[in-house]
Figure 1 (cartoon, rainbow, N blue to C red):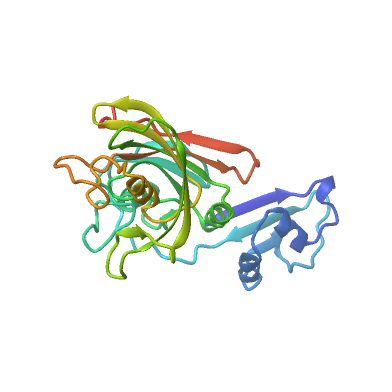
Figure 2: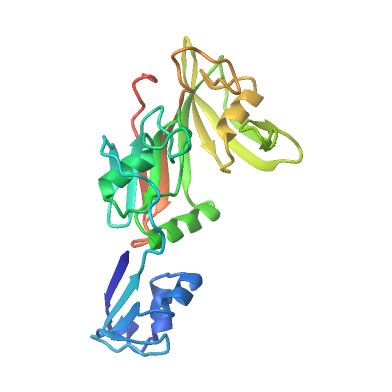
Length: 282
């Protein structure tokens, strides 16, 4: 549940409730829902969106939770990189799925976050990582935050930067532009194909190592397995990639979400969060 409490000042004097809801940047679909219940109040009294607020009035909005959590809370270690009343950013470890599946019911990031937040918490992962991939995951704590952050996703306003160890020597950076699609409906594997979805990645070498090259990867689009497909496409698959490269016993796919940038919708300032490189990278 998300609550807004707004004391009307001179700038908001004589604004209608509809205008105040727009001022709070609450979506039209959510406003339609709020109008059907007792969620909008002025000085403690239920009002319609046509009501007019005056200086000194107290305007309150309650955004109810309509979903029920279907994830079992599990107590566990959580590496928190950033937290406020609306957002949680964590550093996911390797060999941990983001969401529960039939094979992973109790050992996912969702389980651990619900254990941290409480039994009724609805896990909304705005960004997600593959099981093997480590690094930054952005989580919304409520419906309002989820709407605002997902809007940034749709408008390409959230920027992520990955580090990967790729096979072979990469001398110069570049840009990869292809179309990607699922190889078949029954398989997770993606392939480069002209009838797929547009995908764009910018890459640049950071340093060379005996096992390959440490590369900075910036996905401009957000397709499933995009970075893995693209680096394999230019003959530099990620080290340990058992789908798009060569499997290596005892080694995960060496990919790490190093940072994320998004807009703080309360202050309109850009927030940048970074996760340190994991031990197997070092």
